[in-house]
Amino acid sequence: MLRVGVDGKVYKTFGCQAGNSLKTKDCGTQYTSGTGSYQRKTNATLHWTYDELKDTVLCNRETLIRWLMDEEVIAARRTCPVCGENMELVVCTDRSDGYRWECRKRANNKRHKSTVSIRKGSWFEQSNLTLEEIIKFTYWWSEGLTQEQIKKQLHINPNTAVDWDMFCRETCEVTIQRNSEKLGGEGKVVQIDESKVGKRKYHRGHRVEGQWVFGGIEEDSRRCFLVAVEDRSEATLLPIIKDWIEPGTLIVSDCWKSYHNLDKHGYSHQTVNHSKEFVNEDGYNTNKMEGHWRHMKVSLPVFGTRKDKYSSYLAEFIWRHVNKDKDLFATFLNDVKTLYNPN
Ligand SMILES: [Zn+2]
Image (cartoon, rainbow, N blue to C red):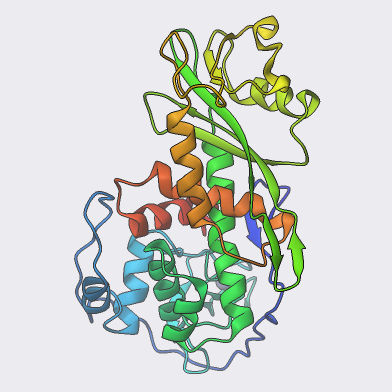
């Protein structure tokens, strides 16, 4: 689970994995950069191929670490918690990372030794996976591979795959929450609709009730919202509409009774009677929202989605929808470093 701390930072908490206990050992070889070479690439419109990632970033540990530092996914410098001076990056053989931050300076006439993991505060903190495994997981997840496929590629245990799949979705969820702005405004049209997802009859002997989802989409942009709701009463939907849609917007919906008072709440309102027509007499329709549902339903897992997990799946769907034209790996990494700022 992600949690937001008092300092406003976002933290992962692991459900299935035990935290790494890291022993420290004496080691004093200094890290020297320049052992590998790669091209920095922060441009989110250029597509990262797997070969490119493998050849230029994952070719050796030193190159990977230097790249992660340059991309600001892990910290490129640390100050010593004891003396406040810059720490040194040193080789250590007892950890999978191969390096850690260390200070052995003298303060108040006393020599001290303090060490800090290169993962501190980052996306990689508190995981038993190697940096390389996490970057591969992140890459494949961004590219749309399923948890099952990634688990096979990496030979990791199922719980670890479940955890990281969840961290990725939660990164989308928090990113979308932070960047959310109201839809619509004067002269804008927003289509709204409610739909039940995940409902199946008598699947292997039990009935799955499904989950109501309420959503809206701007007619002339990719901007949208999707909210898992308990029911589709006016008392439930109206506050969400006010949260998500600017007053003055023209809202198009079906004839569901919860929408009957929209014009009393500062909106213009057009309805389409779906039992009779696809387009109403003034030419309005909810086709874009209908298409959105179809795509969303395909993207949701087929079974076993717990109700409280829906919001993160919806967030992943929206994240992929909004960033469709960008390189998803570069975009995801940018979101990761905004949330898990290691500095
Ligand atoms: Zn120090």
